[in-house]
Amino acid sequence: MSKAVSANAGTVGRQAAVVAAASGLVLGMGLPATAADTTAGISASTESGSAQTALAVTAAPTATVSFERPVVTTVAAPVVERVTPQSTSDDEDEAAASTASTVAEKAVAATASAATSGLAAIAYTGIGSPYVWGGTSPTSGWDCSGFTQWVYAQAGISIPRVNAWTAMTPTSTPQPGDLVMQNGGAHVGIYVGNGMMVSALNPSQGTLLHSVAATGSSSFYTLAG
Image 1 (cartoon, rainbow, N blue to C red):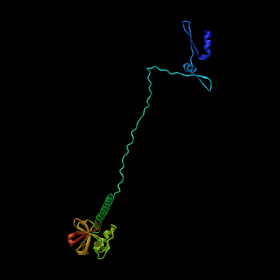
Image 2: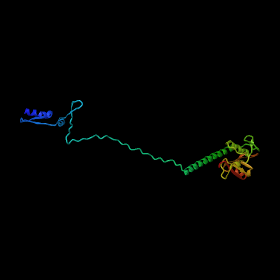
Image 3: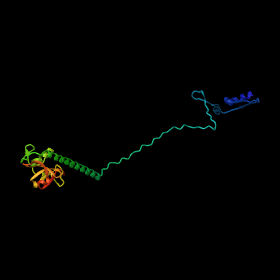
């Protein structure tokens, strides 16, 4: 038997496997070198010449493999608001210009109305002043045209001393502060509302509050418009 093993040693080399059975029989098997390396789990390093043990991973046929799923958080995309472009059409430009013009006209009218209302209040302060032909002063005296010129001047408004209505606009709906021209221009005063006016009437009566109808025919003129 030893001779048989020795005889096979040259061909089998280090890969010969000898198994001793319980019956006392000895069996031998020769394996190729490469197959023997894999079976034994030994690999040779060509660089270092050292042997490394290959670890085998085994699992039962019923085993299951699972991988942890990463948690992913999603965020909704932002909503983009649609911006309406500014219109540059000629029609809209004209409408805007017309609106601005209307606002400006109303502002001028309101300013003129406020001014004439203030004029009526100023006219009341002249009551009691003497009448003097050609005069322009509340202390030394004035005539009708001198009085109306003074009233407007106190409000910062310049009007001619005589025939002042020629620089104004006729109106059929007089407001307090408007000019009252009477008897074809022979007399003038300040309208204060409710059919009344203040004027420097004559030397005997001076400057007073009186009815428009009491002193002849009348025409009204205004700064507004």
